[in-house]
Amino acid sequence: MREVTKFLPTYKNIWLVSFPMIIASISETVVVVTDAIFLSHYGMTELAALGIADTIYALSLFFILGFVDGIQITIGRRAGEEAHKKIGLIINQGFYILSFISMLMILFILFVLPYITFKIFQSQDIHQAVALYLNIAIFGLFFHALNLALSAFYVGISKTKVFIGATIVLAITNILLDYFLIFGHYGFPEMGIAGAGIASLSAEIAVFLFLFIDILRRKYIQNYGLFVFEKLNFPLIKTLTKLSLPVSMEALIQSLRWFLFFLIIEQLGEESLAVATIIFSCYLLLQIPINAFSETVCSMASNLIGQKDEKEVAQLVSKTIKLSYIALIPMLLALAFFPEYVLAIFSSEEALIQMASAALFVIMITTIVAVPADIMASTVAGTGDTMVTFFIELAVSVSVLFYVYWAALVAGYSHEYIWIGELIGWIVCLSLSWLWLRSGYWKRLNI
Image (tube, rainbow, N blue to C red; front, side):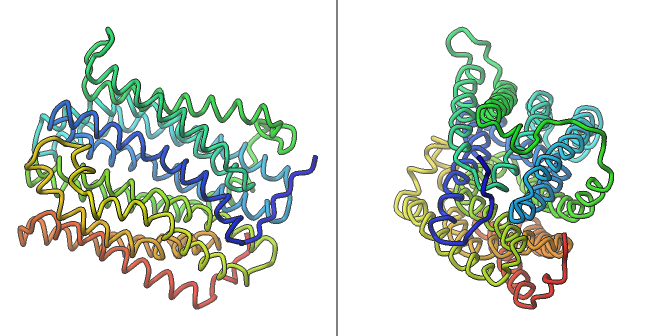
């Protein structure tokens, strides 16, 4: 049976593609959030260290995320053209690239990074806790890279329901192993933050096995030519590299922004770093539907351009923004009316909850601005204009870090004022993305 991979930007189709991706976005967030919840009940040092460890892990993904976005954009274009065998070729060559990059980053985190962090961290207890987590969790980078490539394949062909099952597998694996290994329940050793690292690694392996079995079951290997490992296709690798490098640099800038953000907060003390980790976890939860709809826009904008149907891109953006707000309303209402209950999930300490409450309100306002900003920025990426998305992210990161450094270390403001930096960043992102899309200059590109 011939697969149909063209996309029509109706509300129904956008939702059908995006809803499983909301579930998938939960899978990307559930590891961070569940680790934070369990470690908040284990120790403040471990909770504080997790925020930095997660930003370092995210930083190690920058090349991988860039190539995955390049793969996804290219797959979306070929899906719009219904060139199915070329989709398999893109994924197969992508596996070569991603495997090589992930192994290099694992070696860097294990053998180079400790010499850097030893010099820049104020607290050596934080340094040791970060190392305990990363020395185990970083091996999940290899499987994480493969999972992202397979996710790009599913998104590119608009078959995203598999993400629901993958998320369930990841959540159950991570939560159970966190419970067993952090605290040492049911005869397991008490490992603290190292147990969280094992849980994260195991969850990535479980998701890869789940996706691989699904590919076998649905006969995607035959239909698309997946896992046919031929010799390196240098023209295709050159195309992917040209498309992906700006996105990689964008991911690097974004990850470095969060690392520097937490490094600035670390200068304020362990308690402030713990509060920042709690707020960051809540922020990630609010970003779940936004990230899902943004991924849909990125891939489907490329699909529509592949169909020579550029005029539908504006409708796609408008409808996706509306659906994003609808999906966010329940979460925003829960945080607005019951903030203390949400924060109590992460900590039972009244002092931490008090410090986090005001910043939580700032994050809610920031999220409202983030919806159109992120979707428009993802549309720019979907056009293939990845160099522009890099410069947008650069402008955003410079704006955020300049403000956060001043607010935290110069003016000495409290947490809610420090987190205004994120709001400033999204305003910059929205303005620049809207201006670029309105210009129509992206129509010059041919991928």
